[in-house]
Length: 375
Image 1 (cartoon, rainbow, N blue to C red):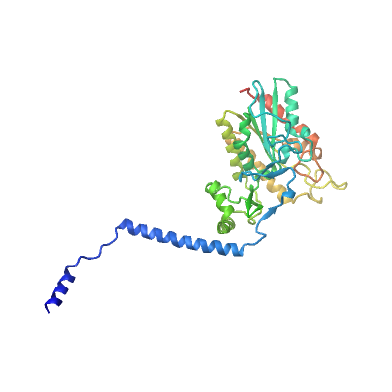
Image 2 (cartoon, one colour):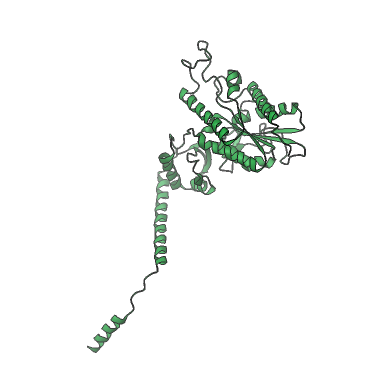
């Protein structure tokens, strides 16, 4: 009896078990949740890899890349092949030059896509080359126009090229050519499992996704790419699919605005050249009056012409709103019609004659504004 009573007394006087503090309990819950999410992510990654389709992306073969090569910069995707064709050692079109600008030289950098590059033309026939010819003939001292056009580039790639490479050449004036394709979703090229894959950055307007961590994770994680695709299809208004382009002038205008702001910070003049669709938008036919579209075989669907025309109107309005100087080539294109075209069925690329007219128009604006200070 006595031993039993002693044990009961000890049990009653034993200290109650210690409770975890609030912070430790919170930490335990957080660690447990993270562990569960990590396990689910590993399982999800495994499942996505098992079910991955070989045709999930448009794969670009290196054999398909003639003028260009893949870039180590994910934001550029591709770049011109240096020291090949008529490209110089710096990887842009034209004669050899130096990064450091000689004293007394005025330098203009022209950024854009295949319209700026002069696709289908000799280097000396491109509008940047003819612009140099026009401005040099007018006097004013030594001057150099550098052609940084890369076929296929979007306004985002143009801005990236300007920020990372063009400014090293110390231009006094930057000209950004905005072509019809520049209102479309920006393309992205990323090395995935040893294959160069092309798709559209449908969530380009989401700033949090435009960073190196996002693209690194996208490159290496099947699960992340699947979730990204779901987000695109759910939230990218107007998107017709994961890899398809759609017109978004407001988003693409931000690239122009950032380029202009970057130049302002560096005390560099900035000029935007708007190159809309060329006229006419239909195939030449003897029985169709030049001013008519109805009844003609369209180069592009009429609804597409209307949509891109409205997008060009928005770009004009954005330029007025933000105070960015704009050279609008629309009236020039309408005045000269098919003479501006590289080919009758081409609605975007300029003929040698068209490039000369564009160079004259841009040169006239530059000369009227005295927009090339010698820095």
